[in-house]
Length: 487
Ligand code: GLN
Image 1 (cartoon, rainbow, N blue to C red):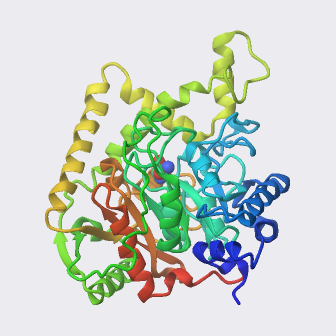
Image 2: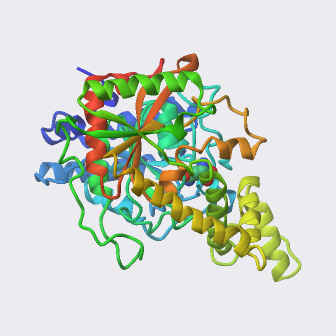
């Protein structure tokens, strides 16, 4: 029998329901693993009492035959979601001691579905970054090679799932933060269509882009979680879509015969590392074997997605982060002369370098005289990028390509070079700017045995189809079942 931590979410839920194992036993098992692998830096906060309390409550519901789909299944949350029972820091000194009076909608929905929370996961400060090195507290390490980054900003989530410290985790994706760390850590993650999951209680980075999604080992597990996480939230998030919750697993198992997969030629330029290219090419061949047809497509403004995103996201961030002023919540400088000095010192002390950089860029591009030159232009190109996808989807049903141009790099390798980090987001940004659903699934190994992720993008509301395409691939391959040595 496989160890508890190797079980898929559905299997774990089944064993809990048949009372083969109790929610308390499962929770204890994962808490112990979290401690044993603490050096990976996955968690920012755990609380045995809270987790075991939730597990006991799940056992009571299980004994009563409650049909909630995730009853007793442990999940851990990216520390960008606010939670009542754990600290909520957004990876920032600004919120180091912050406790929220409420749970984020996504956290609440998962709890209602029966999930037991294992704690809060490391991330880049306010979800800004691609390596998790912008966490104010500690770096997270890639379990496939602990001298490498796990990706970001949902780095802790990817580490926890890859190292079997949690069967599944939540993440958020503003410009790739679910897909890229999933790719770097050899797991599966999906970002749904913008507006599917409520942003209420997700500490805001760039509101027109931020979207929550699950990270787990397989597409099947992701479908189970995503089905619990989505749904309208009109009173709390005005951009949440007025669409009922769905069973995103409803197409799992459908044949891929005749599926047209668009392969954007701009994703295969000279910037793509050879090892990644080889793994992606092999994955595309596998899709042909599964009955799909590959179609050559063009997303001509792929390169522009970098400057466009790095104008729009900082612009929105500079506005969202103005709430951290030392008055309402979070850190306040101890010593100051007057009100303005208090603001200045609070923000100088509370924010890290990358966050400050983005506040400055965002303030600049929104300021009088520069607004038209930068922000407005970026918005116009954003629209064209979205239109390019609609054009492409006339010729194909899904789009496939790399999630990132290379495998995970060494800790520190790009730490002093923000632009190098930004450039590495090139393949995830276009889908984010268009608000499309996207995912990454393990499709091979590259340099130094590091995982490579295949990115799949769908048109709006095509999550079920995406998940099935990933699932069929996972039925034919075992990349998602491989695990790092020592875990
Ligand atoms: N790496 C991108 C950034 O730094 C994306 C982050 C995200 O999706 N949260 O902004």
